[in-house]
Length: 258
Image (cartoon, rainbow, N blue to C red):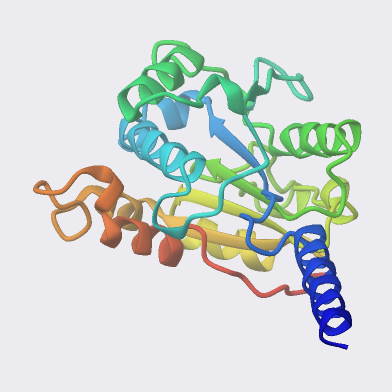
């Protein structure tokens, strides 16, 4: 009876270990986030006051996410490309995550400056072409239904104008290619202003896509003494990582806009 009970106990423990391993308990969860990053290469933004700061911030942001610092989510895939071109609907190259992995912040910044040179700009800011390229990439790489975060470095002003008011037509922006990609998809517009940010949140028709915007005047505070401690290595900058979670990677509630 004692031997039987020992065998029974052994089988129970073995089965439990097998089930735990099968379910992935005890291991780090497999990264699921699909991260798309777009940089506005129009002359108005590149020659504006925030372009240099945005590239510097982006290097820190990419480094922190790729290394999972401060509890930031490590992406399963990451694509970096430009928003806009010489003409409407012009496809642009997406640069892969591997191009930035195993590099320091300064090396990532240097890579970004090569991809987005300040002395080269394009006249057309084409958000819709950027969205369509994201949708195509998600479908081709079978990333549908995974969480998607779209981070855009831009003032957010569309080139299309309303025929009546002659003001930027935010309703011309089309989220439809993104709507069916995932139940959890967020567009994050950084380095805009309060007026434009409000229009992105309230004027663009959408069903599932969530929108988060952050003003340029708030974004530049990422490197202030209150955020980055000069006496600590970047890996220990807890205040910066909390700032990222609160100001950039904020969890947004969905809101239907017709």
